[in-house]
Image (cartoon, rainbow, N blue to C red; front, side, top):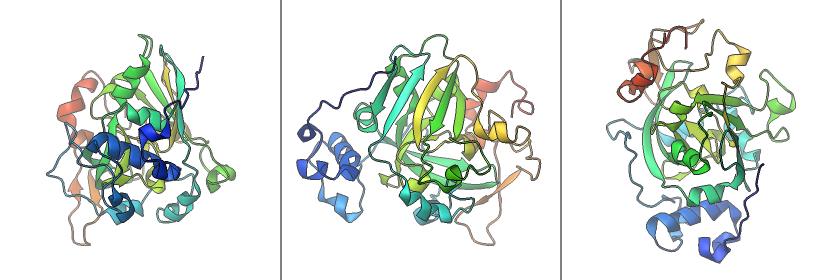
Length: 317
């Protein structure tokens, strides 16, 4: 049974009433209050950090050079809007992201539909500086703001029969041209993980980046980030999470099973049918910047390789 949670907390207990009137600032203001322990800061209007001083995630790396924020905001694969990376930035502004709720169902003790602000009130936000490797052989480094997916799943108490997690993205054909025309892929976008992958501390749900809320073109208001997998696994604009006994059929794997495996683990020894995965172009570099040697599991092998120790990674790609 899916139970709709009630928004029974008065606005005055979440944030300043003046800010509450502007629902687009709700999550910003609420979390700034929770983290900093103070009222709403005027820096919200000055495009400064809306999160306060966030702790770093356990595996966040300060040694990585961040990709320029403006480049990340204007270079996105968001096929619901466009096949052109730059066009998605403007088209995505039509997406309705407020209010936002997430349905969690399947093999859990506590299924329900939860408002995003209710979810965030119960989570500890951190900054996660992760590498992101696209299957198209380019990469970037992003300072995400988010929380552990495993923490959210523990709240709904997975059953022993929960072996996989299915994620479904938003379906808004009026705002998303390629959904409206039913172009190329089968919509809405669907992705999946094994339960141990979903519970791994590296796996997060992101609500921001670069100290601000998440831009719409980058997956607002809630996206998955799995840094040891290719970017197509990190589904954007999540509206539904289901815990399943069997693996879900995912969008890219269904569309081109020989090109996009269910696992999507970064692996330089397994080429895409049309290009090598041995190296990658680092966004933000110059024409003369050498390509980076791609690492197995995108450099996170020490943390995740044990999950695949008994698997043939060329077959289960």
